[in-house]
Amino acid sequence: MNLDARIEAILFFKGEPVSLKDLGVLLKASDEEITSALLVLEERIAVGGLRLLKKDGEVMLATAPEISGLIEGMIKSDLHKDLGKAGIETLAIVLYLGPVPRSKIDYVRGVNSAFVVRNLMIRGLVEKEQNPNDQRSFLYRPTFELLSYLGVTEARALPEYEDVKREIEGFEARDSEKGVEDGETAAEEAQEQEDTSEWAGERTE
Image 1 (cartoon, rainbow, N blue to C red):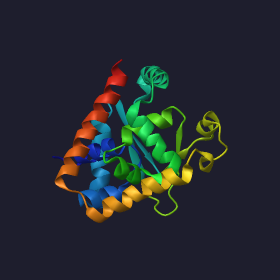
Image 2: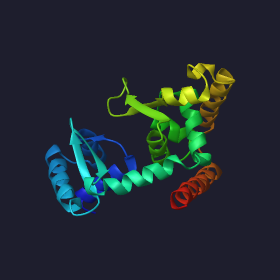
Image 3: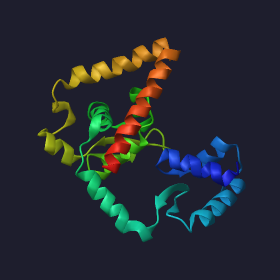
Image 4: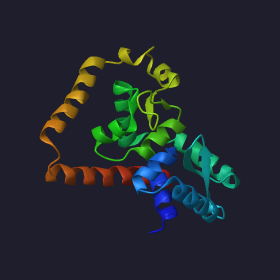
């Protein structure tokens, strides 16, 4: 597979800005090769519904401005739908562990949460900030609008905050100690299929 196609796959999977340096490390390619491949990718997708955004040494995929009306309609539709199991699960992790990197959200849930997090951000329930300990990633936290909706002034005021947080962190510790067994891997794959189907169903209703 060509380098530009592999970069496209990475950007699609990440769903957020990725630095050129990280792309070089992931793909074992030089800066010149990455830059050249990005030019190819940019030209190739220019005739479709996606665009390549570039800023401060980072790149990401975005929808073309020509279809902004369609996207706006989909966003409005999403805002009027229920969160669903995957959304509530992810929102709980952000509320009780936030600010939290998406890698930790993925770890606790056992599946990739990029699509779910994106939907929560669109709804104005979750926002992201730069990770001070790793400039290559972001931290996700609840918005003031969400806290206001829940009737609390801060996350710590949530019901049984310490107990729930301790339980989630305890799950991480236990899972880290015992490792991932074959049965757990199968369960995670089944859960991912369930979550994907659930969210896909919501988007097609």
